[in-house]
Image (cartoon, rainbow over the protein chains, first blue to last red):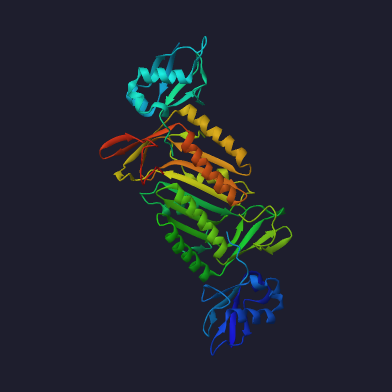
Length: 84
Length: 84
Length: 144
Length: 144
């Protein structure tokens, strides 16, 4: 399935505000966050510097690698946060 | 020797703003804070409720029972502090 | 008021907002932009947020801390945009009957914000700008 | 300005006074009069100080804490006189490059004030007034 990803801060500077990634489904209509992260890093080598430190948000909530991504979900890839 | 004592808060309400106490000298022209405290408690039974919890200041600094009091020192007897 | 905002933050407002008549201890943390980082001169910090998620994450922190510190009323704000040295980036106000709880909740509030809220900052200095990486070794000077 | 004063205290002023351009973390403690104590209704608190000694003791605390927390700038004030519910009795502002030191120094500041500064308070309620004894068992409600 194809997933559109929102990007922020240094990732957005390097790759633009969004990017679309093709990810294998773990079951029909569903992929895992982990698979999406792998597909993203393969498609965008510029992001490799952050690797596993990239945080993933699904529907505006942090998600772990085992969590599902489904069509219609809002997905964002975030550099390590640095507020305050 | 005779020592004038400043009093504050509940002690002042009960005994007035100052009281004078006669205290035995530990050596000529000098008494200890401990002896002064005892003489004060003997002269002012109303203060017994605070007893050893009364704090003593000599020249605007906390003093211990072994510290000396000399003529001309500013002596204050203070209930336990309760600022903030 | 939004918890993540482009408007200047006035810390005193949030203290008043947090206080209830049964409270005796109020604690405030204010994170401001400082003029240096790792020995580099800093002229401004540019804060960016994933705004809708940052709002929700601030709300979720408030909910979590209300459970951990039931006696405390917490008000938290994060500013975004370009801030000059001395400008307020983040405010955590905690009000409680007693000071121990106010201190603990205030400290927990800023730690949670720094750990969880999707906000980033770009440091501007004489040589241009760089995104701040919180894990970058910053020997003596971590951010606020 | 005197450290012990009859004038109202505006906490924001002391935050600004403490901050230097190299500071990123500011912490403030504000002790206010609350509306109850041990289940009794409180209408006002009347603060009294042994003024010249209280001034000096506040200065001595600042000197001690400057040694313990060399990176921190501390500003402390205590108000005296009759204060209504919600009025500010004590302010401790701490400003430092990093938040850890600001929190630690701010907390130490209020603890030292409560332990050492010759200030007393008389609690006023519907049934008259009573001097607050800090060692009196106050099961759930200690002062600020």
